[in-house]
Image 1 (tube, rainbow, N blue to C red):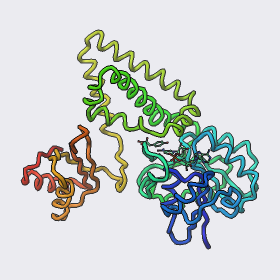
Image 2 (cartoon, rainbow, N blue to C red):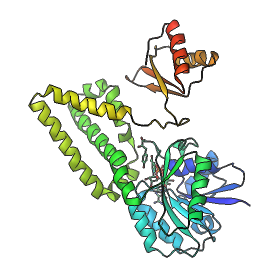
Image 3 (spheres, rainbow, N blue to C red):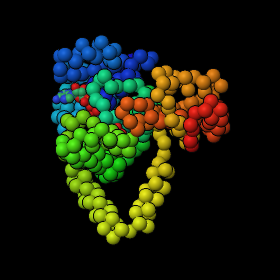
Image 4 (cartoon, rainbow, N blue to C red):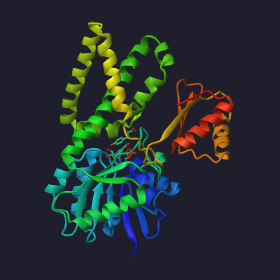
Length: 366
Ligand SMILES: NC(=O)C1=CN([C@@H]2O[C@H](COP(=O)(O)OP(=O)(O)OC[C@H]3O[C@@H](n4cnc5c(N)ncnc54)[C@H](O)[C@@H]3O)[C@@H](O)[C@H]2O)C=CC1
Ligand SMILES: O=C(O)C(=O)Cc1ccc(O)cc1
């Protein structure tokens, strides 16, 4: 028995899902696009088993349909699917970053008997977009939120949850749509607005003096990476969740006012307290990077500006039989690698790597 999976919109998220499923025994992946030129791209990148411009063909015998298009198009796709003949037991799901509106839309539509809609949102992604940025590792160890309506039978929910758990290696979690939008509004949508506003503030200063861009350092890059996210995808998310985001921005303004007060009154202790409280909360955020679920032990080292140095360091550690679970280069300047973060699964490995690096005269800090 072959399980047929159809993906509408094979971009960053749709393409990453396709790569998780493609080539697995018993699974067949079809990709739908409205753009003829993308058929060739999908085939060239071998991201799907079959690519089509026909919605009917894509939907006809699918066991699972994933809607992976921008949020403003999800309702239209769902509505079109509700009018097509679908396979008995077919599960339609989406990956949209907001959940209340598509849940309401699904409730209004009359899906065929035995066909179910279950909202979904993988809590992983990037500032990149398009199928070229897709990766089968994207969802590993991330949360994958599902928002099933109450009337969806448990076996249908479990079929989808099992498919996702097994092939994306994400952790499926069930959340109510409105609560999803409130929380994701705060932890994802608000930060995107702030990053974009901050970059645009500096961009304007830079028009008068290009030193702003030249001197922009690691902290600025760290907190503004998501300002490079896709404008269409994010236009849709923000408009769709605008009521919640507007409330969040009011709270944000209160925080800004509070800071203004602290600076005006030269409240040194108050400023320290803000950093202390924020640091304590942030340091406790769970690490859920790819390839790990548990806490990681991190080492930082200054990377000298030599060609091949990163490979040399990781090889030296590997040669001692020490497993590195993650490597990240934290850019502090645009022209040199900067600081390298090496993550280990346990303290023993970290300590061994630290001793070895220090013996080799690297500047290491924990
Ligand atoms: N970007 C991210 O990090 C994340 C995005 N999402 C959600 O995933 C969905 C897709 O976003 P991405 O994959 O990032 O975007 P993307 O731009 O990489 O992919 C969008 C896909 O939709 C297709 N598409 C665009 N306009 C279309 C139209 N008019 N008709 C038919 N297809 C159209 C594109 O061809 C492309 O395949 C969005 O709903 C977004 O909210 C969810 C989690 C993370
Ligand atoms: O790149 C990042 O850090 C993100 O925030 C990715 C992301 C974007 C949109 C989502 O709905 C979920 C995750």
